[in-house]
Image (tube, rainbow, N blue to C red; front, side, top):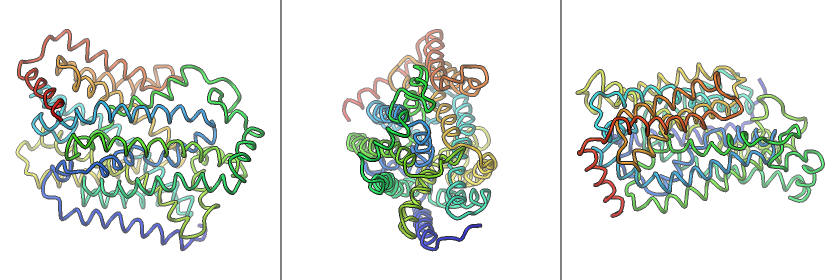
Length: 495
């Protein structure tokens, strides 16, 4: 094991202590299930926006995306463009409507809960199938965060990879277990600020040390000309149209991410969505742009060349070379922030879904609020253990795991969220068909489809068509549903 830098260790410990302290603080403020999984719908615009983007980006923004840019150059901006566009569309067209409809539809606390109330599904089928896909894809998604944590502690401190997984998972579990949604959102707010500072500071420092923007670009032009062409692969070949579509299609995933959508549901007023949108978009544009630049600067600055899964350590390697002791620890803590903000959100959504959409729906219909909170907390621990097992292979690439889970949620839930909010004539069976077809297509595409096309594209289209076709065949929904949709549209105009 390499010698441990005391300054970096102190910075990490202070950061981890602060996050756990927030969890302990909110433990005593959590009164019921609504508090634990939705914060009582009392988030202000700053916390809502920063929490949504921090939980969105995860460790892949400081590891996966810079690593991809390190290899592929500015063609990585196709992903960034897709994500920025998807973020804006989600805030612009989904946030307000979802906030209003979930409260109107029997004060729905989770996405599966909303689907059941929206379509008057007394069979619990929508809840159950949604909970199954949430469990499957969040298990993979949470694993990606733990992989990033394992690589972080292994690279910085030389701690064996498995122990690194356990350490990073342990901290996330502690404050999620204790404080629930409010703790997760307030830690996300702090983590979002730290991530923003780090993602801007590291490439700026690298460019300065290289000799300025001109010399950096000149070196890239001379040694890696393909890195400055958005239409060129690292091997010099042209990027295909399908590849560009696949990279841009990351933006489709936003409409179906439960850990992001739940932030819209929790803001204290739909009237504050506009302010939150501006904050979120400013963060997204600057952060994604800087993350790609990290990979480009790393290609010039780092010698010898990084290979294999080590490409995703480019941010860490640069930080350790740029800064000394405690300051390096502060910057590296941003990776922890990215990992923890997303993993905690995913654990909480999974826990709330299992507690309310599975346990209460099938096992204990009359379970008390305190019992459901306890089930949620136990689920956090169990899912974390399974995620550690999935993440135990150190050769896993963070970006690959995230891409798979992102596509799963985007296709299983995205089309249904949009249809639920904009089309009055959607039916319960159409909703079931959309979730099943979208999620299943993602699971099968890598084995049966074209690996060159990102699985979210065919799966999203198939899910959307399944909802429309089955709903049309079934006929008009009940008058009760139509009346509620009319009241929902009126509420949107008033807010």
